[in-house]
Amino acid sequence: MTLQYLIFDASDDGEGSGTWDAMASVSAAEVPAVLAEVQTVLDWAERQSPGPRGPLDEGGAWDADQQVQNDGDWTTVTLTLTGPWEWGEALVGRFSGSD
Image 1: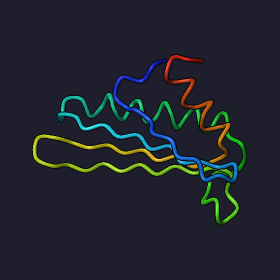
Image 2: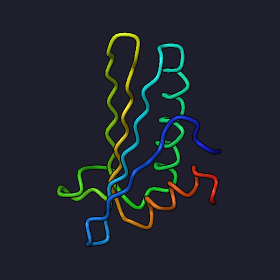
Image 3: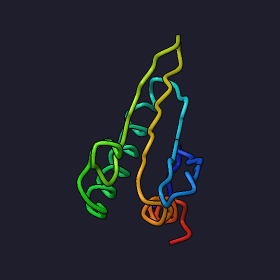
Image 4: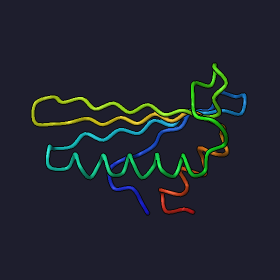
């Protein structure tokens, strides 16, 4: 599956972990499709989990944060994932069509 709304931007911490941020700003009619993409990504992350989910500085292997903000006619959905670099890059590859 190639994502239609979410586009990930990666940053490497230099110690084997990374952060992947994706954002989509859409009209109200498109919000369900964006939230479905978010859920698909989170489902993959759970299935391919490199370990327990939770803050990395508290012993988690990976974590995710989702935010939804409304601004007039537009809704912005943000998804941030953190975890091992190879795991995150595999996730991005899976949904970019390069897998």
